[in-house]
Image 1: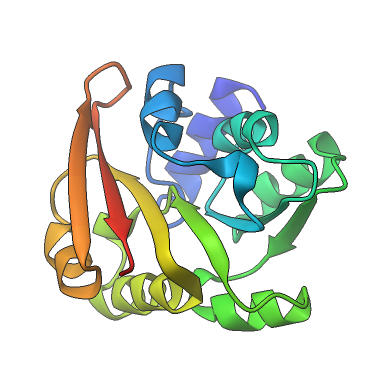
Image 2: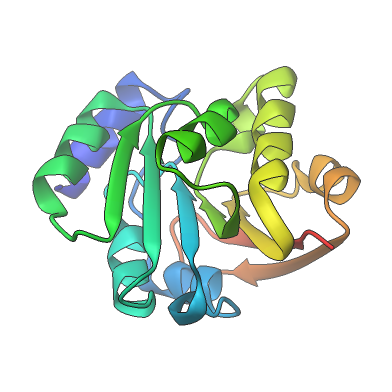
Length: 185
């Protein structure tokens, strides 16, 4: 997907798209940095957009890992369905508040990692809370939820929900971003 198409989605659907440009390779590296994806059974990606993180995860996951990709934006969903043909990937058009249902439909109960690009800071509080709690509920003990944001606005909810929250800053992204790495004990 071209950057102009991404910008168009941001301008017309900014409640679903939280950035003016796709994530940089530097942000991708920070997001994936501490995840042992090769050994994972199930990984969930929330809000993949153009699939920048999805493509990198496909390089890092094992041959038997299932990558469940959840996108609510119709344009991005159709683009992902066209671009990604890997049998390890399940692309679902749906909401991140229904993660347990989406897993059940794939005959999965829990996941090793949730990688999220959702624009939590612009979502209504109730929706944001439901998404974060839903993500925690599907994680295995010791599982990680990794989320990037352009502000520290979401730190309170993440610290309230997860046992451990670490933050890294990525200045080499447009705009610069914060990466939250949260662990379920």
